[in-house]
Length: 66
View 1 (tube, rainbow, N blue to C red):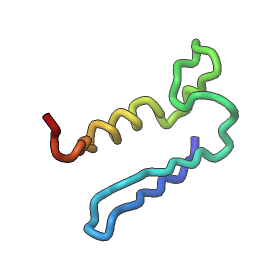
View 2 (cartoon, rainbow, N blue to C red):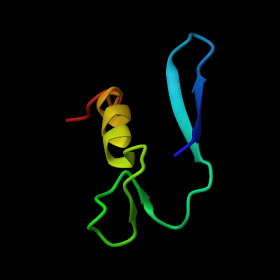
View 3 (cartoon, helix red, strand yellow):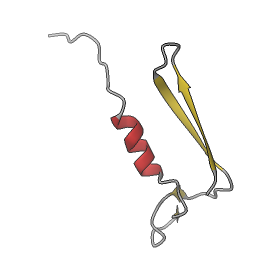
C-alpha cells in the first residue's frame, strides 16, 4: 500500500511528530493479519510503527515533587 510519511522536527532538529497518510486505504487497521477483522495486511504495519515512535521518545515529567 502506498503511503506518505511526514516528519516534523523542532528547530533544534529533534523529531517531534510523524504523520502517516495511507493512499487508498479503507476503514481497516494497516498491517494487520489477513485472518483478522477489519485489517489490511498490505501494510505498513501501524502497530510496529507506533511502537517504534513511542519507544524512541522518552517521557519528561519535569522535576519530581516529594
